[in-house]
Amino acid sequence: MQGKLNILGMGPGDPELVTRKAERLLRSHSIFAYFAKKGEKGHARHIAQEFITNTHQELRFEYPITTEIPHKHIEYKQALQQFYDQSAHHIQHHLDQGETVNLLCEGDPLLYGSAMYILERLSPTYTTEIVPGICAMNGCWSAAKLPIVKYEQTLTVIPATLPLEQLTDKLYHSDSVVIMKIGRHLAKVKSALQTTDLLNKAVYIERGTQLNQRILPMTELTQEHAPYFSLILITG
Image 1: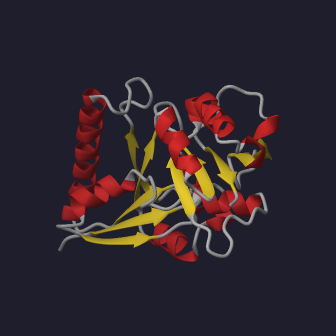
Image 2 (image 1 turned 90 degrees about the vertical axis):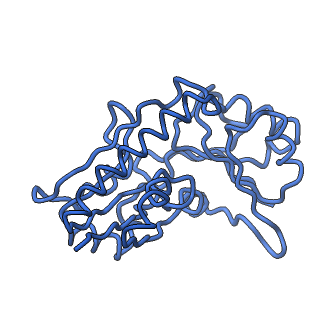
């Protein structure tokens, strides 16, 4: 009998924002998997800490690259393709043994989540369930007490990895905005916000809902780089 793959959204950082269903499934099955950068614990793994016991078995999938190669480069795509193939193969081994595997994903699994690439590879063959999680963006706008859309306004989610011209164009044609994946693109984002006259409306949030959360207007931000878990909110 084949096992089952559960993909669990673990929320933005605060363990109390993990859904009851995700916690129940994590506690009920001994095998869980997660992604992590080299040398780091992994954000989803960190959120899940209090739900894990010494009876659990971990499957750690460590990214082969992060920012060493531009993400549009063919070598980057090939390396990640192989990485997700290998990760899916490890999970598949346990599923073929009739075991249930919980794959943890920070935020929601289907919003910029690595878990979606495992879903693509395994869901055609294996029973799969996705437990949605609170996204980083709504965790952040709640922490900032910032109503993000009103009336007929629209919400645009923009990755900061876009080229400056595309980023600026999308800002020109948006009401409310969430800019994600800030990291080393902070200076470029600031430039786009200045060009579109939106800098005074932008709010920067770093590690939203976590103990070391930081919220301030973009006009007060003096640093040149931001951590991966940061975003910028602009209300309509």
